[in-house]
Every structure is written in C-alpha cells, then in structure tokens.
Length: 161
Image 1: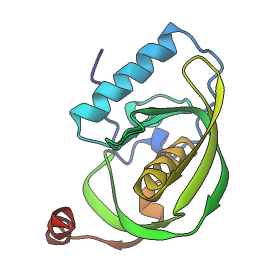
Image 2: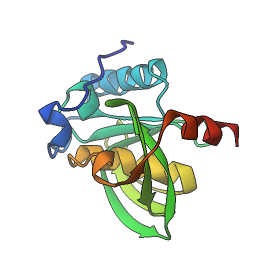
Image 3: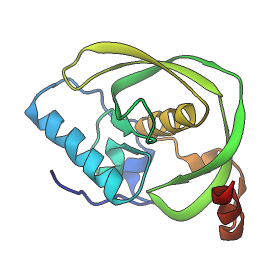
Image 4: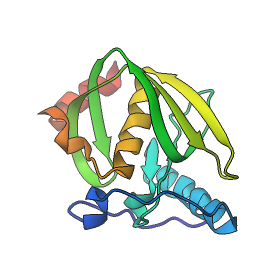
C-alpha cells in the first residue's frame, strides 16, 4: 500500500467532471487501497480519486462507525431528504473549514471494486461525507457551498461537544 500525494486547490483536476470507471481490475484495487492509506495518513473521513490526481469516478468514505469503509465507484445519488447545516473541511483545502448545508439523508447506487452494483443509505454525518466525496467526482468543491467560513476557535468548540 502506498500513501499518495494530496492534490490541493487550485489544481485543475479538482474542478473537472471525472470519467466513469470501466476497468475493474487489480489496478483499481491498488488505487482504492492506496486511497484508504492516504485518507488515514492525512486524518480524513473521505477521499475522491481527483484528490490524488486521478480522473476517475472512485471515492471512499470511512467515518469510523459500524459501516466501515464505503467504496463508491461510479456513484449516483438516487434520493435525498431533509437538510442539515454543519462544518466541513477538505484535504484539498488544508486548514479551511466552513458551514455547509446538505441533505440529512441520501440513498446512492454505486459499484464496488469488483463492478457489482449496490445501493446504500446514509443519514447525518455519513450522508454529509458521502455527498462531499460524490461532489468531488463532478468537480464541485465544498467552498462553492459554504454558507460561512469558520475560525479555528469555533472548530475547537465543536470538537469538544
């Protein structure tokens, strides 16, 4: 496994619509494994392929709950419901945080590392993380959705809650 370099803004790939994955092979498995190691190394809860410089619709999310690591290849949003406002950050924007409004619930359809289709439902923080990563695959950055940027002191207060 390899820790990859995180691509930071203003790299062009971060604002690009990524290509669908068509090859489900050992190369894809290695990329997904590297993405997981990279996400852990940089203390993230999700990572999308363009964040390591790859033009492909692949993303992972792991918020350290009972769901474990969710790998999403060619994900599509099937349904959303409700709304939530909360803090977000992004490994491609070091030390930048803002309040972002997102749906409270999401249902997605995606493929796993073998190409098998699955559906997945998530609420609250997990839904937020999934939607953030899917946005990356379409060149949408969280900064375009920020209602208000947060100062470091405000973040410290949130972590203590």
